[in-house]
Image (cartoon, rainbow, N blue to C red; front, side, top):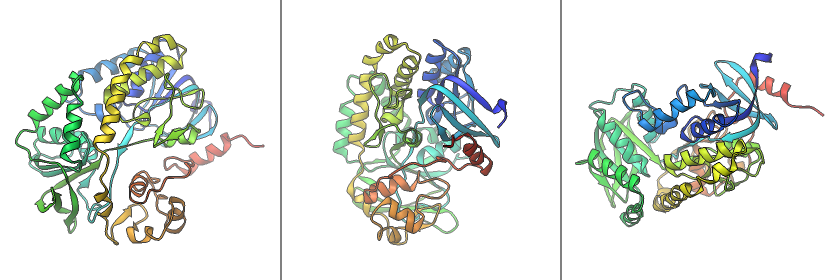
Length: 425
């Protein structure tokens, strides 16, 4: 690896969503040098991704601050390994980079949770956020019939976006019961910005049927999706459609934090009041510490960025602002927790691990995630368990016992570079 591929920064931020951008800005405005890395070509994460006509003013303001702060930006760059403390390896356009750091801020965001049901692997059955991202990237959806299903506020935001761009939304299915949804809505009192967002969504989704206590039972089609069978309040109905946008809330991306040795509890990275993890020079912000929306991600990112450069007193001024998003996160998790009926969706032939074509019947004979990997290769394909891992955790109560590098698929040359970087005895 030549010297051009070796870089060192006082602060390295992994993740280019709102939390990562806020962290990089606050660190760079108070110290240098700072680098931010993201595997997407455009920063902003799922929440701020989009063309010029879709980008939020708040996002534009933060991205302008990022530019003016002189942060080194590495887009399209995927971190896959930590060969030794203080060094991460990453790939970009076929090249391998060694990124050294004094302080590291992990802001790796979250991904959609997929649950398996018959037909969920058909073409045009997509994650809710995934379909939105593809639409933002140019997928034509005008006039397409779409069922949006799963759980969580993301469903409403996705439905509103797709409708705004010409799609016909047939139904929004939310698995949570009306009672929990009503309690969640009542809890928004005292958060005017959330009430305003909810009101805008209500206007955008007027005349679109919304069904609580509802979820997809099966997807049908030959070469691609043709219809979706839905349990709607206990009644089975079939909807002919072009797309099913389906996601059961979000799962935090904790693989890098786990690889680094940070403590994980109940699926989230443990941090102190300064967003510092159990590894002294590693901080974490945004969804890996709790799903709290963009407001929570921004304030946590600012606190992490300031604390990482020794501005603890400035960070402390933001502690009160962080309380509201954290309370929101707790309400969110309670309101949209998954119901037991969803565990009965797969039949014996339902694919659980798409990468290795592992079906439900084979996993029923396994007693743990480790046993499933050993006997069926579940979780050992290109996604490295990012899809089937949360699904099997819900279905069987399995937890991954460890995270091993590479945390993303990497080229042989990059893995060779990792072995060159790793110190030997």
